[in-house]
Each structure stands twice: as structure tokens, then as C-alpha cells.
Length: 483
Ligand code: ADP
Ligand code: MG
Image (cartoon, protein in one colour):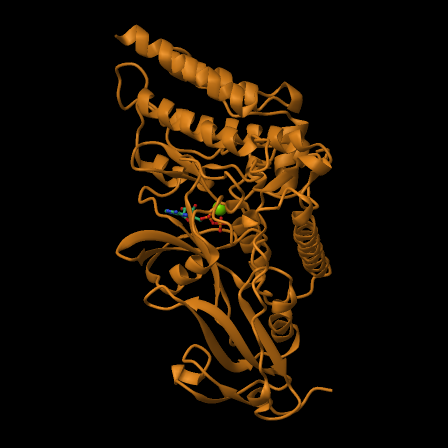
């Protein structure tokens, strides 16, 4: 039974007390919860200290999920306890941080007999975490399908959030980064959130603030960025991820390098490329994609990753003229040991305009990871086409096509799935290649490559590695000719 009035709770900490007051009391909405949380944080001198906060949580699932969050078995150094029996019930709560788990990597006997129980424990923990994650995502998806409002985010952190190998920064430092950020201005909006230019220790960084309904995307993107060996000069550089707020609001943040030129889509609106800069950009994008798609074997190996939303808005232009692939909210990883894709993939995802024919036709074989890579290659073909239109050829510097989205002449501005299906599958249309491209060697070479990328038969399409090698060869040959 829901109480008709709110609970009075003790509050500690300006972030959770009403109007930013230091300590005191707060009142929940009817049915809400009181909580106490303890968390490991770094103080100004870099020492790990335990931070205690208390306050009010919202009613129903959103508060309940936050109360449950610390039961997920991960290395998240935060424990939260809730109560709702009486006013100020949180005064008697004494949550305690768990003992840190034994460090498997540093155990001298990890490979021998003494290391086996530790390894087993670690493996069991991993399995439990993955199961919890899978269950949470499944639940979320069911709710969405049923048209219900999704719960506010639990506060899980990615499985290997504390390892520095993929992300560069250990978890505790990431949490400190998020606390030290000053937002400057909003620079972009996408499907999952709003991107801000912010300052961190005098440097410019980009902060993606996810909409509260998009915790699955935040979680996914953070997890992908923290994949071992993910860092590459043509993949957006990840700095930190965190969830802020413990009261009735929650913000999910993803902090990355900032690129002032913005997305390739925005850049191409105004800038005319020469063939050198076109080749540099194309080569860098396909290098990023080849790295993403590649699996690297070994204990610290990298799983193959497919992006599933390649488009010019998800590619950023760096100052040095190269590009970086961004927005991994839909990416999937291939777990080689189990021959499995790591999340149950929904086939109808991505941006409709850039969807491969087999995605539009709902014929993509989700059990075959290469199929996801082939669909990425189709989208890459369309991006190459967008870039070539903006590249001048021959002597007439300004002779370029105006910027356009792929299929701009064939489908309406916000095409439906049906519009795209009719155009790309039934009519088998593809973007047109202007005659002027064929008179320019680099443009003709790229035109040839894009056609081989957007072939209607997925296995016929080029792989990212093949395109990369062809472009590398082309670039060395033309440099030799110019000398
Ligand atoms: P969404 O998942 O919501 O689509 P994105 O990560 O694609 O979010 O970002 C949305 C837009 O914000 C991009 O198209 C781009 O214009 C801008 N943007 C994103 N990240 C950066 C960044 N690191 N530097 C500069 N602009 C960015
Ligand atoms: Mg995007």
C-alpha cells in the first residue's frame, strides 16, 4: 500500500539535500525511500576516502532500482541501503563497503595450483555480472516493447570499468573526472543524448549527457569504449564515464576528447575538400573501422566489434584532417570463445537511411557476426559517397556537388522503414556517381570502392581491411607519381 504522504529522511551532503543545503532533512514523494550511501572517492590530494551521503529517493521502480543497484556484483565502490518504514529511518542504516576482491592479476600463483580458487571466484563473479546485465537489459527491452515507461537507471558500472587497459583511466579517477567537469555549451543533439563542450583541468572535453530513458545506450557505449585494446587514433578517445546524482535525478555522462570541427556531416556542409584531404579522411575512417572489426587474439586480446550505426553524423573530424568514429550505443561484440554475439541483437536498429538492404529486409543472420560487419561496410560506402561529392577534381576548384545525404533525391527527409525498403531493396537503387568523378583518378578509385561496399549481396562487399589496403596502395602509388 502506498503511503498518502511522503517520508521525512535525514539528508547528508549538498548534492542530496533540498536546495543544495548542507545537512538536514528532506521529504520524499508519497511511496518514496530514505537512503544512506557510502562510496569510495578521491579527495583533493588524491587519497581514497569514504564519502557518506543520505537523503530521499523517488517512489516506485526508479527509487527501488537505485536501492538495488549496489547488489550487482561488480567492483563499484559504492553501497546504498534504503528504508521506508518510518520517518528518519535512514538514521540507523550503516551500509559498509565490501572488502576489495583479491587482485587476480597480481597473484603470484595465479597460473598454478594456488591461483585456481581465485580464478574460479573471478570467473564466477564475471558470469554472475554478465547474467545480471543480460537480465537487466532483457527486462528493459521487454518493458519498452510493452510500451511501459522504462525504469530510471540502476547504477551499474561496466564489467571491466576498473581496468585501465581499454579506457586509459581507472574507475576511481573516472569518477573524480566527472566531478571536476564544468559544462560550457551544448554542441550537438543525437538520438540518445545531448553533447556538451566542457572544461576539465583547463582542457576542452566533450560530455555526452544521456537522456534518462537511455541508460542502456550509456551502459553499452561505456562498455564498448572500455573494451581492451579499443584505443585507436581513428576511434573517438574515451576519458571517463559516470552516473551523477543520488536523489530524484540521475545523469549519465560519457566524457571523451573534443573535436572542434564537429561531425563529418556538419563539416562537409561548408568545407570543400581537395583530393589529398579526401584520401586522408577516407583512409582514416576505414582504418578506424578495420580496427573496430578486427579481433586480436591472446589473453589481453580485443573482440571484434561491429558499429551498426555508421553515418557521417557519427564520425568526427579531427584537427589533423583525420577522422574518428564515435557513438557506440548500438555496437555489438563477438565473443570468440563462445562463438556468440555479446548481446541479443535487435535487427531493426540503426539509422534507416544508412541501413543495408539485408537489414531493411530483416534477413540479416544475427548468428553470423560477419553479417554485422558487412552491414557496416554498406553504410561506409554511403559515407564515402557523401565525401566525394564535396571533393574538387581537376583544375576547377569549386566544381563540387552540394552537400547531400545519401538517397536525398529518392526518399523523403525523414524516411520511413518502408520508404527505404522500397528504394534500396525493391528498386535496388544506389546513390548516383557523377561523370566528373570518373575523370579524376582518386575520385574514380573511391567510386569503384563505394560500389563494392554497397553491393546488394553482403559477402561480395569489400572488408574494411581490404578497403584500407587498397587506399594505402593508391596513396603510395600517387605520391610516387607526383614526385
Ligand atoms: P547520439 O548517440 O545521441 O547520436 P553522438 O555521440 O552521435 O550522440 O553525438 C551527437 C552529435 O554531437 C554528433 O553528431 C556531433 O555533432 C556532436 N559530437 C559528439 N561528440 C563530439 C565530440 N567529441 N566533439 C565534438 N562534437 C561532438
Ligand atoms: Mg549519433
